[in-house]
Image (cartoon, rainbow, N blue to C red; front, side, top):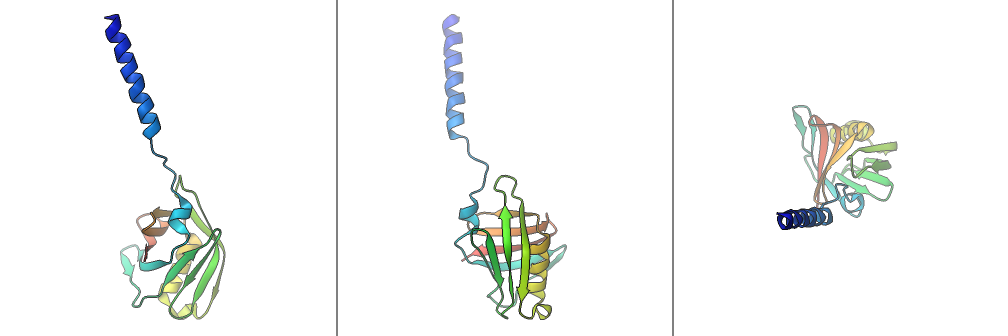
Length: 143
């Protein structure tokens, strides 16, 4: 009986140690997800409405601390961004625009989401910048 208890204890300890070495890190790799990519806008979701760009060229590019959103109509939205890989919180600040944003519905919607963003979803292939989870967000893919 003593042998069985020692054996069980050793097996249990070995299993616990193995699991601790293989446990995954829940933090996202922010550099892998955000930087070094041209993120192409797929659509903007606002409640039940989906705004899909009628042409390509709506692109979001992140550097270490800055972002630039450009449109095929020469509208530019830029500023600073921050994210937390564990909580997936996301935000933008010091946002400035240039170009005729008033005549570009997609750019205006993107600006509102960037100003009010709260979190992100995704990985190195696609991301969502989210204002209100499940309700208002824009989705991009990496080409």
